Image 1 (cartoon, rainbow, N blue to C red):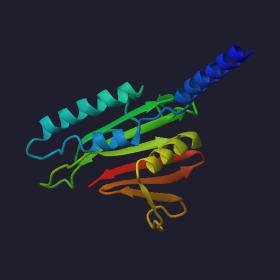
Image 2 (image 1 turned 180 degrees about the vertical axis):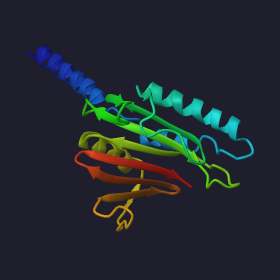
Image 3 (image 1 turned 90 degrees about the horizontal axis):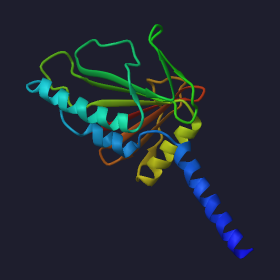
Amino acid sequence: MKKFLSLLIVALATLGQVHAQKAIDVIPINEIFDLITYRYITLANEDADATAVIENYTKHFKAYGYVNELVGEGYGGPCSIIDGFHKGGVHDKENYEFIPSDPYAASTVVITACNDGGSSDYGYIHVELTLYSRTLLADVLDQLSTGGFTQFDFDNPCSEGAETMLFYNGNKQVHITTVGDNVFVVCSIAQ
């Protein structure tokens, strides 16, 4: 009986680990910051800088199962990079929208590097991660907590009526805005 209970405990622990690994399915926030600060895009070396940055983040997002399809309206403006990835759903190309199908994995990523249209550098990329479940949001909040981020309470005049949270850790900032039922936008910024 003792041996049976030991095997049962091991089996349940293994099952719990497999379920926990499958349940949360989003790129880690610390890895997003590694992608953001990978390379500064200069106007003088725009093509080489942008190519290196694109190769780097494409490799990382594909490793997490993201599909490289633009999730917005397309390219435009004074930008060196506008790119998008998604997982846990489909990209409706006709209507330019992402349709989530897996509540435990549905997320999109939009990456931009833009300047003011003048002679300034593009800087570091901007990453916007949209989550389509409270489960993924809870995972991101847990990552921020264990990563040493502190929450800063403020009223955001730019997102009237939307709940916005700001977290910071040194020169790293994460803004999380609720934009709909179970839709959360996570913007990561490194200065």
